[in-house]
Image 1 (tube, rainbow, N blue to C red):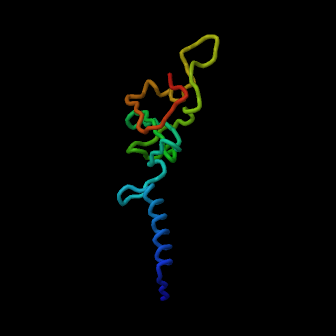
Image 2 (image 1 turned 120 degrees about the vertical axis):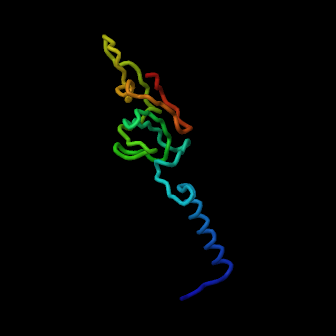
Image 3 (image 1 turned 90 degrees about the horizontal axis):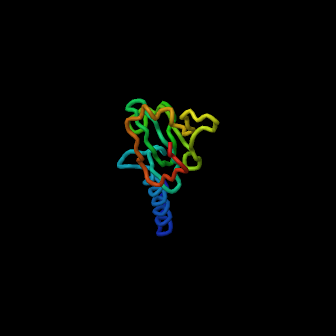
Length: 130
């Protein structure tokens, strides 16, 4: 075993350890590591909505990652995921004869939703009128 000692080596090791610790702290809670979809990020995150047929909920998030259909997310199975609503504008479908349909991605589930909630900060939709 070779042991190198000295103030420069100790300082370098301490700096490296601190850098690694700071990186890990951004993705941990207690003793458990978090997945990117569990880390809210209102400044750089991706805005998305999750519909779950488990409890007919539509929840809006802004996280570092987006769950996939079929994943367990916040104790619910993901039935559908919607993204792009911070840049898109929604409204009635274009037709001469308005039949009540709109192009909002979750519109087809609107009659099934019993709970709708915005969970994370930093979400700025272009339009979610419908």
